Length: 219
Image 1 (tube, rainbow, N blue to C red):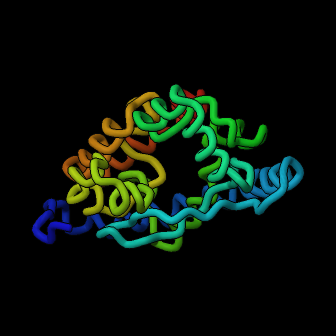
Image 2: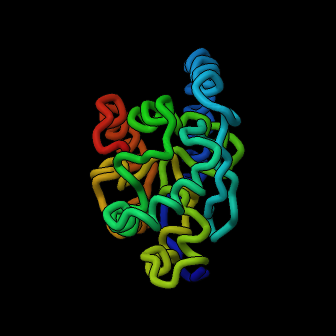
């Protein structure tokens, strides 16, 4: 991590960004609390396993974080992925380019709906309250994208992507989402460092809302 990688922002930007994060997340959780409960019940009814998925991710400065999401996959998803990638060349090629599968057989029926509507990410507002995430920022990347893969695009942009707190939404979510290649998503994440400001964050949030409502670019 490059300690000299700093961007000059307004002195009050960190204060207003954090204030917005807390107020927005609290309001969101309170307003949608009945939906949180309903989704939890549907997940438990649909398949065996916990309601929440807790994933290890990279935070600001490369710090390891635990990120909350509603569980969308079967509990043996990792084993299923390994079997599919080893036996299906077409699926393996798609994974190498996007780090996602558009028709992911690991997902439960409820999980596919949650992903398509981005409802699976609602628990991340609790991460925002904890201070691990921001509402707007680069997406929190998996640890092995930096530490386990020799040719990972994240290594090229890590000094920018990891210079700011990761967010629930950001540039690649408003610029194509899962239709973008993994390398394109990382490059867009790096641009946030150069563009960040309070009003730019508001612009990203306002642009995210209609995209989520119509489920454009979601998997």
